[in-house]
Amino acid sequence: MKRMFLKLVLFCLCLWRLVGVFGYTARASVSVIKGEAVTLNTRLTQINQGEWIQWWFGKYLIVDTNVTTGSMTVYDDGPDGRFRDRLKLDNQTGSLTITNTTTEHAGRYELQTRPMSKRFYLTLYEEISVTEGDSVTLNINLTEVSDSDILWECETDMALIAEIIRAAGRFSTFDGPDGRFRDRLKLDNQTGSLTITNTTTEHAGRYKLTLNGRKRVSKAFRVSVYARLPCPVISSNSSQCSSSSCSLLCSVLNYRPDQ
Image (cartoon, rainbow, N blue to C red; front, side):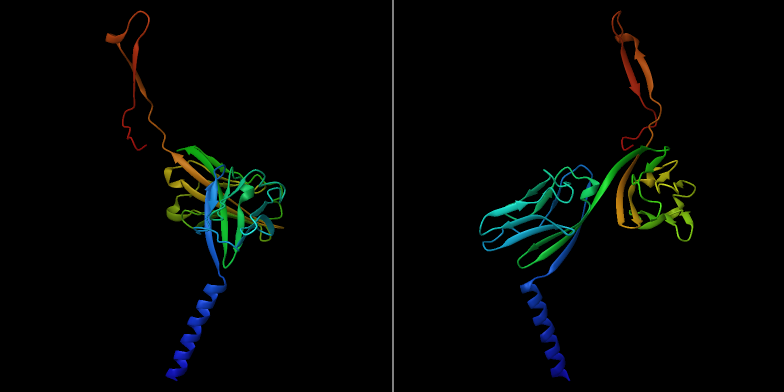
């Protein structure tokens, strides 16, 4: 029995080594603010002779290169031209950079080379800022949502805060962690957009929308909430006033530099 167990362990180790030699698939999650550039890093130091690299976006081939022949083709017009003039390939490492990103660039990317493949899941965050006490609306900006279920999550706390389940006729909002969203959420039943009212700095963070309908759509937002400054006090220094000019002093009481 002991000998059989040792043979089984040896077989598993050999199988593990074979997977490492002939190929494996790694996975990575990458996020970026809309409009900024993002690099999908291969973590390779150099592409060797005889190797080839392909980059895929979903089912679409967007970059095809062969190190031996020195050929490289960038299919930046497909799908629907969303990558046009936005793709840059590092000829040494094979890493791919997408510039001037939009929400259309979110999704699954796959690097295929020998002896490995790697998948990247890219999330695009739309940056939104609001002053404490004001309302902020996370807009879906999609035309076809009437037949779709909608889930809103506060990614920062991994919590579901709103949902629309049309088959059950359920349109719900939730208080969230520590009750910070209590009586502050308004869900638009027609568009699915979510409004947070009377915001505080606790509402800053990342939010994610998942729309399940004829196609699955996800959008992400990063909300910054800025503290409202006290009313400034403006005073004049009479000793520095003349007939043509006067020196004014603007000050804020009870103000902390970190606000």
